[in-house]
Image 1 (cartoon, rainbow, N blue to C red):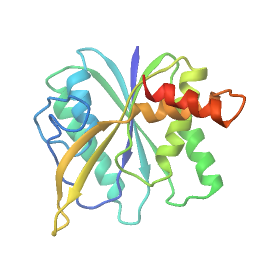
Image 2: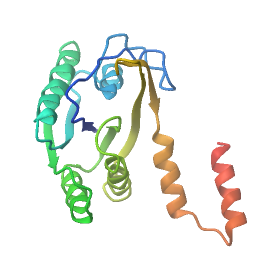
Image 3: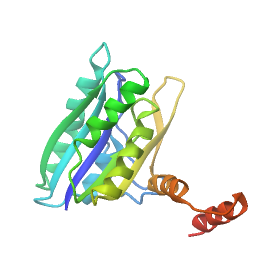
Image 4: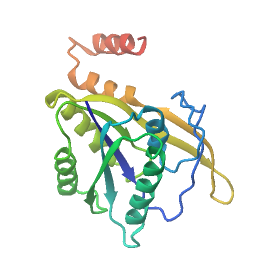
Length: 206
């Protein structure tokens, strides 16, 4: 299956590269520093001749930082892939930095247009405007339900900041379970709130 990677591109000027090996809940062992957490995942999952389409979700900013960070992502993943040999293609989805209903709908449609049927999907929601992961969850649900896609991993890179605003203590989390929890609550059928809570508790016990 073709792999499709979604990554929210930050508008920040200064980005720190971090080593995520052995942190969080992902069991990632990649010991090189990365700016974009999903690249640590890809470093361990890409195979020679894999066909991979990377969709970079950019929110346009007046200083052009999202454009610069797009180039940074590509440079970082290309370096990782130089030792692997997967077949990478890059595409971007640009949107304005405004959280209106019209902009949300336009962003959702533009992202969906990039999804190909029968693909494996990975997503990195570390960066970007706060509503963007919510939009991306809708895209993933649509892709799985109607385009026969397989949502493999949704990751989030968590850091703290020191007194100089430098990122420290990186941890990489697989939050794919939140995607499935959202799908569960949307599709759940129950006679009343008590039964619905019981169904939810059973899901959490899995």
